[in-house]
Image 1 (cartoon, rainbow, N blue to C red):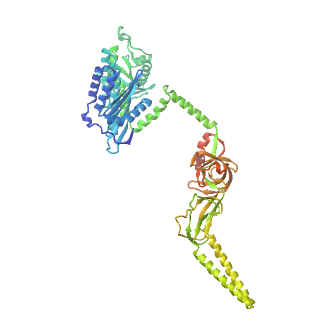
Image 2 (image 1 turned 60 degrees about the horizontal axis):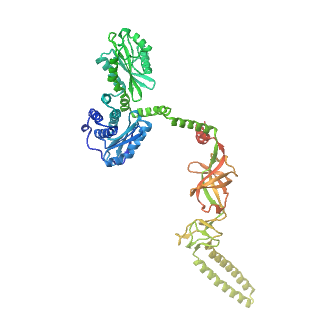
Image 3 (image 1 turned 90 degrees about the vertical axis):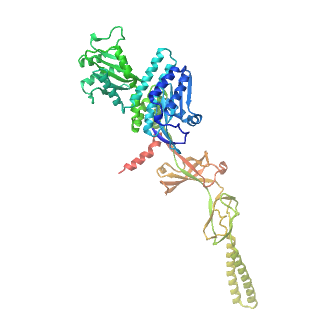
Length: 633
C-alpha cells in the first residue's frame, strides 16, 4: 500500500457510506442485471455502472478478453473519465501482468480529499477491473478492497452465466450470489483462523456433526486452521496425525472421500463416494465413526478442505456431502480476502517477497526463466570474462606554451582593448599605463642635458679642464636617468610577445585603476598545440606509467575522442575535495587543426587503458579495498 500526493482530480460524487447501498443490495441488483442482460457486453457495461454508483466511484474501467475480441468499458462523466483514464489503464495493465496488487491511496494537494485506486483481476484471468473510490484513510481503503474483491468475483461469475439458458443459468447465478454473500459475512472476521473456527463450530453445533475440521491449502501444504471444540491443536497427537493424513489423501484425490462401515454405504443408485486407505485408518481410529473430507475449490484450485465426523449410527450419503459443499464452499474463496484485509503493511511486504520467487519460477513465465538463465550467464562472464580497465578522471586542456604578463611598474591603467578569448598577434597592445609624469621628467632631463652641454663648451673655451670633466660627468648621469625614464615610458605599454590567445585577464572594466608593480595582468597561450592535465586518484597511480595511451572526451564535444600519450607523472600528490590525486601530463596525438574547437581551460574526462580485468573485479575492487582498510588492525 502506498500513499502519495496527486493532482486535484474532479470532485468525487457527494454522499457518505451510509447513503450507499449495502453489499447484499448490490448482489441482488447484479443478479437481476445478469438475468435481464441479453449479452455479456450489456452486462459488463451495466455491472460496472452498478458497482460505480453503489461504491460512490466517480470513475471505473473494465477490460475483458472474450474469445477473439477484447471488451473495454468505462464508467463516469466525461471529465472524470478523461482525468483518470491513464491511471486506470496502468492499474489494469499491472494487475493483468503481476496479479492483484495492493491499492494505492492518493490525496489531492489542494483539497486533501483521499481516493483509493483499486485493481482486481477477474476470475480465470479473463480481464481486470479498476475503480477510483473515495477513502478517508488506510483502514477504510482496506475494507473497500475487500468489498471490491467480492463484488468483482461475483461480477465475473455472473458474466459467465449471461450466455447460458434455462435452469443452468438460474442455478449458476444463485451460486454466484451465495458466494458474494459468503464474502460479505467473512468480512466480519479478523483472521482466517477465526473464520475457520466459526465454520467448524457451526457444523458441530447446528448441523449435527460430532466434529468438524477446516484446513487451508497453499500449494501442496495443508494447514489445519480449526477443529471444533478445541482451542489448541496438538499436531503430535495420534488423532490429529490421522486427520492430517486423511486431508492429504483428499487433496490427492481432488474429490470427496468417505469411510464408514460396510452396511452404511450409500445406495447403489447414488453417485458413489471415493474411499481411501488413510481415511479407513482414521475411521478405525475414531471407533468406526463415519468420517468424510471434502475439497473446496477456490479461484486457483483447491483452497481449503473440510473434514467431518458423525456419530456411528448416522452414516453419510451423497446428498449430505453435496449439501456440505454448497454450505461451506463459498467460504473457501474468502480466506485470501480476510487475510489481506487484516494484514499489516509488514505482512503485505513479506507476502510479496515470498511470492515473487514462486511467480518467477512458474511454468507460465518462460520469459522470466530465460531472464534468469541470462543472469546466470552474465554472472559467469563477470567472473571468467575480461574488460579493459581504465583509470583517470577530470582532465583539462592546457596550452603547450604560455606566458604570464605582469605590471612593469606602478601606474594607472588608461587603455585595455582586449578581453579573454581574443587572438592577438605579436606586438599588439594589450594594456597601456599613464606616462604623463614620466614624459615631464624626460623633458626636464633633456633641458638639463642642454644646460650641461653649454657649460662644457664654456669650460673648454676658458681652458678649464676640471670644469670640462665635471660637466661631462654630470651629463652622463643625467643621460642615464633620461634613458631609464624613456625605458619606463616604453614599458608602460604592454604588448603581446607572440601570437596567441588571451586565456586570463579582463582589464576593460578597470581602466583608471592604479596597479602595483609585478601584479599579474594577462596569461597568453601560444598557438603551438595543447597538452592535457589529468588527475589520477592515488589508489590508481601505480597502474600508470609514461608512454601509456588513452583518450580524452571534452564536455563540449562528448561524442569525440581525442587520443593522447602520457608524458610526465608529477612526483607529489595534490590534495582534493574527496581524496588525494596525482597530476599527469599528456600530449595530444593530433594537431590544432584536427580539433579546431579545442580551447585552453576546457574540461572533460581522460581515460588511460592500463590492462584487462574481470568485470567482477572492476565492480567490487573498490569495496574490497575499503573493507580491507576498515578491518585492518
